[in-house]
Image: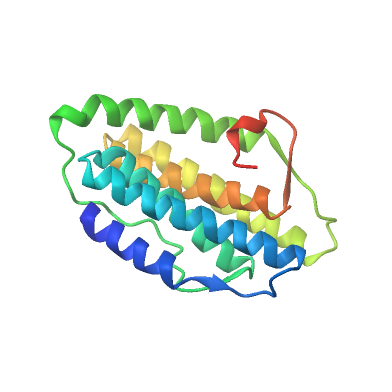
Amino acid sequence: MLIESYGKEFAADAEAAAPAVFAKTPLGETAAEILEMIRCYAGDGMVFYGQGDLVNAVASFAYGYGWLDAGMFLGYLYGRCTRTVPEITDRIPDVLLDHLIEKTNRYQRMFSSALEDIVVLPDSETRMYSAAQHTNTIAISTFTEGIRFFTAGNPVAALVSFSYGYGWLDCGVRAGLFGIVGNRHLFTI
């Protein structure tokens, strides 16, 4: 998939997403926050793309899709859920390769720390506990996949995987599935 196509698809999906819970309730307010994050990342990604910053564009789109898919999985939003990480076929220009490697390494470090800096909050006998476990599984699997891509010499796929999974984890924190026991700056709380 081309980065431009990925961005346009994400922007359309972000715009079409809607709260699935009543406004003016704690769940409704959380849904509004999740939707705001998704739409901000769609807008930021398109700005980055327009400026020729393909690295930040693809990271923004993937991170936002992580929020969108997690928000729909948790029942906060209606919309089109992908739950997949696309293969980006665009070639990143040589002038951006250092930026790509730096950002991918940074996201790997931040995502690794974020995974270590949370604890599951819901009681193990509740539905929200299983939701937290699923969200954590998505995060860990995309982190592992990102490392595999990076080791195989595909930093674009690695960045997409890290960004997407980190979006899931961050949304889970915002939704109250996880408590932060380490660096709060790793999350958009």
